[in-house]
Length: 401
Ligand SMILES: *Cc1c(COP(=O)(O)O)cnc(C)c1O
Image (cartoon, protein in one colour):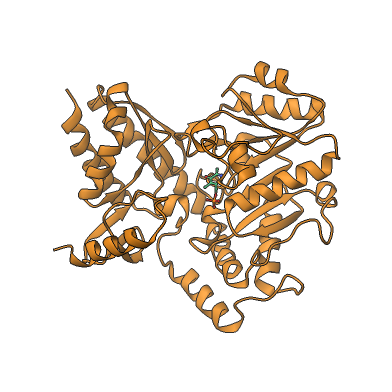
């Protein structure tokens, strides 16, 4: 039993730098919301590679796009044009506030591009970027400095200069932090890693007002919330706020590594040949996958289904919180990014609950050390949501007193 899983785990643990605490499964196959491990166990994937495989694993249209592009042209330098890149750029700018795009390979890289653009637009004296406590923006040095969680900074100080963190939800304190050096405010419309923490609309509108009044750029990190996760192509559309710069990654390529930084013409003009670049950014295979993703997400009714299933999951989670009040206090989120907020008592066992769900064949994670986070593929069925909810109910019952 579990022979292949444990053998792969043992071999990996001998040779990998230990940056990940992994569950004892080596995944070999994915289809829709189902993953299969090396010993043939199956899992209902309610994490989707952390908001990446939003159209489910190995969606046939995306597999086809990837295979065809890989057979035609896998890589060419950004010194030349390619069709998948062009199509993707047209689709993303044509369906957002943005006029222009820069393509990168990951979320952190997209945020790096946004930080560099904000700084170069503001000129030499203005380099300060204010982000929010509890935020997550990536693991490179600049993006980790922007991340408002001290645990990610520990051991890597000194952090790059120019990043400060405002307490969550307080506009007055944030305004008092703005100086002559500040050039931008960076935030997620809803904090994903921070524990599926929504920011209220008035607060976000306040941020936009501060940006206007103080001549700052508003950067939305939509790496986790973008690409349909919240029930619209981008979360900003539902909030009635238009950022100056937006970053995307995670679900953009449904598993192919790709990131993007989008902005308006006036700001984009500050980047010229030589100011920023990436060898792999805009890779044709990743772009072909992203074009296929966009076409599916733009089809009629897609977002309505995400919203309806998001409500269904929310109601199910609220019911569980009502049934097990000593471990869970309620549910929150938008669309199909949802969190079950645990009580003090529940928090102690959050990681263990995730492990017990894993043992039952359901994959979720524990975010911000306080919330059980659900990020299923957007194509999840109501029956699959029911499977998740009933497995979760069995686990919560073990902790209810
Ligand atoms: C995942 C994430 C990132 C980092 O993306 P990587 O691809 O891991 O570099 C940045 N910001 C947010 C909001 C994220 O969720």
